[in-house]
Image (cartoon, rainbow, N blue to C red; front, side):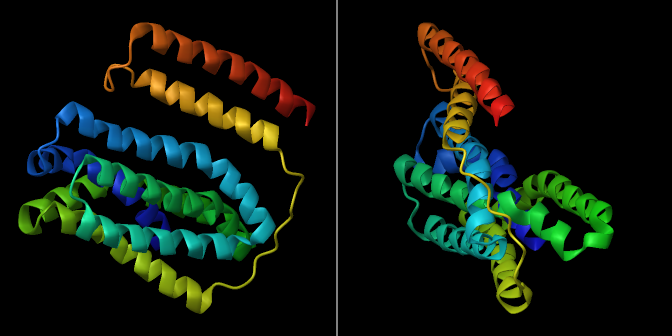
Length: 232
């Protein structure tokens, strides 16, 4: 559950901290919103591929790698984020770590507590909901008290806790490797990517003709994704 909070905390925290970051780094507010878009896009499209990777290499290994990425990138963001490009790169890397964690947590809970699967899924959903509800409050209060850098770094505390507990107590999980669905994964990435960019076209000032093109690509890729998965 600590790992779940650490994976979802950065997204909710950034929603509150964006104006403060934009002011300190002298970045246009409309431009800095792209950071959140990149985070959502990357974490969204990578969750399924990482889930399949977890089936192959082990859930606990991918979970620990994800927590390690979250800890490392949080520290780098706190120390080295100085401009728009560095923020985009660090937050994109953070989204990769979050996707690693999100892709395997439910499978791990189901196997660790086979007799309480419903209760564990309820606790997982509660952790996700609480992350969304409290991360803006916590990060906002910390930003006023100690600055936005430490407010972002607060999520790393939970990553460290989850990483240590995972190294100490996580055992082996039974994985069932399945046939790699590379075409379906590629189509899903295209479908989600084009949709998310198109929906945020006004924020990132994409021309109308390009937004329409993206929606067309989304529709075509969605059609072929459904056909491929129905045949699988």
